[in-house]
Length: 245
Ligand code: BGC
Image: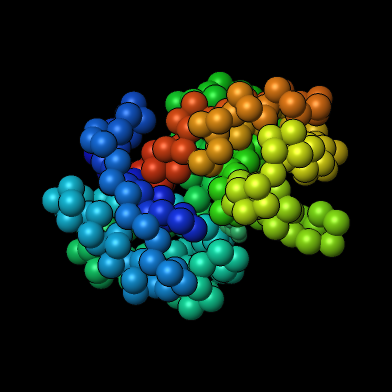
């Protein structure tokens, strides 16, 4: 089945049609900058523009950077507060004219990696961590997702972990890979002590450069980059929409 997967991020909104049987993108992904403030209507217009670019008429899955319950964003860390309590499934369905399903962005990325990528066949506890504007987490056990975990907001020295160890912070503070790896290590070591996972998968924009920081990490748990790199969110959003249909 073909589903349009869209990943709404803090800096860009990206989409591509996905073959949900194989996890392959069926066309080059299309990216538009996230409108300033990331308010509902401007974001919805961008989503509609991406759908139009592919002349899309079918299902759309949308990965969104917030916990999502029945199409409603429950919280907003890196997007406008106007999303909170809004039925975003309905808004996106209205503007695109297609049946839209929202899912948390990290959960989407995790679903793709568990089905086709780095977590495939892993029976134990797997934690997908996306490092981008924020920090997203998706936790699986026996291949099953515990949805909407928000461990990017764990406290790290009196601040949200994502305000210390996200990729956006690395870029903003111009941290060397060594310094950044030290911070990330601290975050991962905390997650390790809380969950005793069998595998960490690192996704998000930074996963393209995994060889620069993964070898510097000193945690016990095996840690690998996402096989879909930053496209995991697009693929997983498509899988989530198909599952709901
Ligand atoms: C949000 C999460 C999201 C993560 C990555 C966090 O700020 O609260 O829902 O998964 O950023 O985008």
